Image (cartoon, rainbow, N blue to C red; front, side):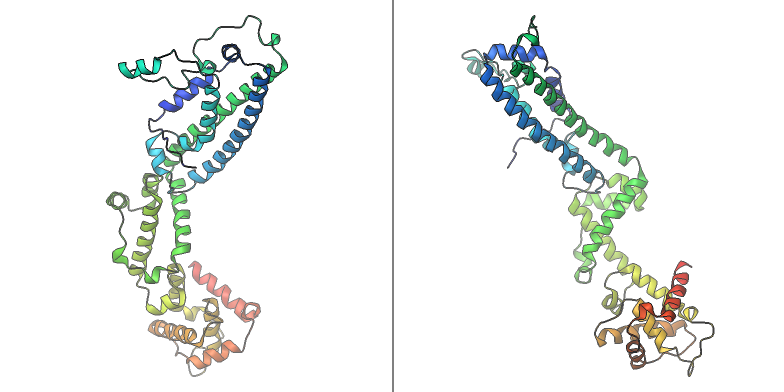
Length: 384
């Protein structure tokens, strides 16, 4: 369904609806029934209608509760602009607003003959549906006999009307609270930064596979976002400012752009990209461990011809995730390992065939006691 009507007047519209709902009372209901000359059959139809309304409004309230959690914990959403234009996202209350409007129309005050034409000539504004309904009228007469003088169907109607009014208030309070909570979130840099971190991680779960083909020069962000990022280079300062103030697509582009720039700064080689894609954190770990590879070896290690033991290179290759791949990828890893290790290592490098033979000699590295000890030493070095 397409909704063309929007409400961009901040709290004014919501204040009008709340005021109308507050005016619903026993007197306004009884006056409305008398004015419209509704009989018992009309009231029964009204009861059935209100039962349907309440069910739909309860569903809307549950949707709003789920939406509140999603919206507040998402760094950039498609609803950002809605919240800039109005104090609450009125569009999320479409069902409830529609129902209160329809209910008021059922007790509409008949306009005098020629009133519409007179208003048009004199430029007088047309009263809202709430001002022209007996149910939400500001002035009603009091029924001296009260509700007890009416049949049970009217008593049921009043009970449903009260439930309807409470449901409307509950939904409007929830919508207002979303904006209050959003403002509180923005006052908490740590919370905003955590939401930003989750947003970035979610983006990168998709981008890691495509970063190799991204042309950094063609990645641009809006001037507003670029300036914002320049003014607040640290995430802890940037997050509260950008939270719900940046469109989702712009923020996604910024995440990708900064990830590509980070990769450029770290200077990932072609071999590193072939082996680990754009996983910068993994590459940083591998580099650190290769540079300190000699400390990963047992103290009582016996070297043949002062060369590294092939099985430890094979174990390290397994730990790095290079396993069950083609021979070409394994050769790339051994070449990459040798180039980096020989810069600082104390031993010579074994060739690819020796590493391949060591790898094939053990089909279950993860349950190998020697490999488990090796992984423990890796974890110790990683913590240093």
